[in-house]
Length: 269
View 1 (tube, rainbow, N blue to C red):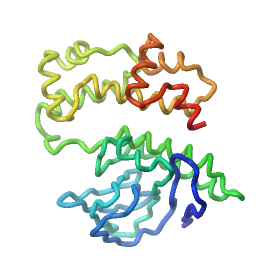
View 2 (view 1 turned 60 degrees about the horizontal axis):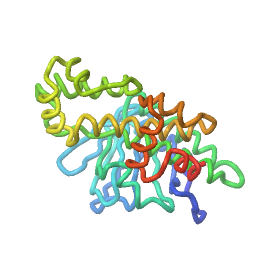
View 3 (view 1 turned 45 degrees about the vertical axis):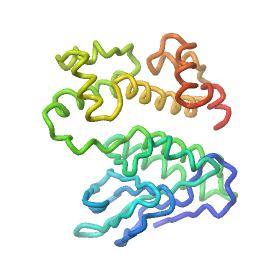
View 4 (view 1 turned 180 degrees about the vertical axis):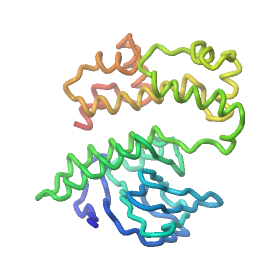
């Protein structure tokens, strides 16, 4: 059950402070939370994580990210609980709350859980090299944070008819078709309601407009493509995330990130 700590003074913008895989997880109670962003995912068995009055049960491939200082406790349910985990630091760690939209708790499961597992396993190999490949590990840490930035805990009223009938299908449409020229009118038409009503219920349950969510999702995907495919032109990536006008994409990206796509790529590669 390997566990690795970053004992080197990091000059990377984001970095893993610790990593663990195939970890025989013991019960843990942290009334003052953990000092860093902490991600925990089940590899085998089932665990429960209590945050305030909420209890999250993590089955295989399901994970949870906790913000610094969030009181919590966790333990295995039944037999042995095997986990993987990661904590985050780096020169720009103070910007992580903004990247994660100040969420205190984020959940990951399904394909995202599998993708996170793969990233952590690749990062472990970086720590097994001599010397440790901190540069590549930094890239993996940022990829993981980008994946988590696209996660969110649904609002408390997730079981409401409007949430299930209108908002959740629109979220799925955006995730499946963000590369297409989506509009509010088209999305509302797909769920057979008016644009005005979709705007109202989406803002109520998601805390942002449909346009803001779509833009944020596209920018997250663009960041991933910029880092994963350094040879790919910005114009191509713009098209791949739903922008036919490259100049407009660069403007939107700069407004969201604070720099152009090219500058973002140069900073991280």
